[in-house]
Length: 356
Image (cartoon, rainbow, N blue to C red; front, top):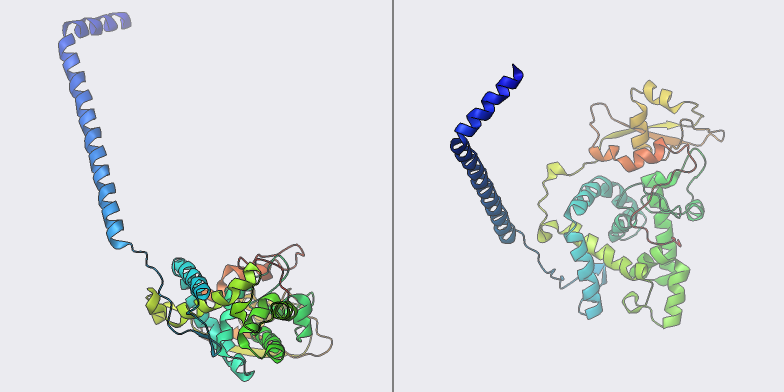
């Protein structure tokens, strides 16, 4: 029966061969026309997109401000080498807008903490921009071990009074590490009597800058021949200052509601050992994550305090909603994994060994 069925189909195909060929030809031609139409429509979309992109995307040459200062000291913007260096750093930051937008957000959170400390220590406010160049205002750790907002190495941090133990690292404590940085700035200013050189030495070290001043017989940072990192350092600071101080000039449209604010915090002072910090946080009505995010200087789940030292542990005031910045991944991971001696987080802005 099956054989008879195929025989009948074969006979039908033979008798109506012309009709079948015509139908197949129509199907083939229809498919070809549809492909051509799809290709043309796609080409039109691409063409329209290219026209839209070329009409709406603009790349502008940076205009160097006529007057620039750092810490009240004039920047010689009329000198070609200086203009070129400033233009390079401005251009780089302007066309990395996503990154720069996050810097605006972080600055709105942390500058109100840093500025009063600088003022109290008679350090020019412009030094707050060094923290951005150093760490992007995150608790970064460089491959060489420079740590925290101010990227202090262990020996320097201890020398300026910060506590670093297996349980505590005050380089992660923004207020205390800023105080330590101020001590450095004061000491360097006594040596150089020039704030621009003080800032440069924060990258190269006091000895490194003084050595080059002696060798090159100049006291002007802008006349010094330095390593690439230090040669760019002040220009990076100037670019960050310019963009954050005048965002509208460089095409940033930022509303206040998009910026991070300073959360209302309460600080609980303790002067005894806490064997279980998680339990301590829960007893205050909070969880371990909140404790870690607001106190990144606490490295483990315990705090041994045989010397009765006073520590202030921060928690949000009742009803306070923490900003997203409090939960940024870098400080959270830094602490969550701190029990591992192999954990290290790279600071992408650190190009070489810190000398300060």
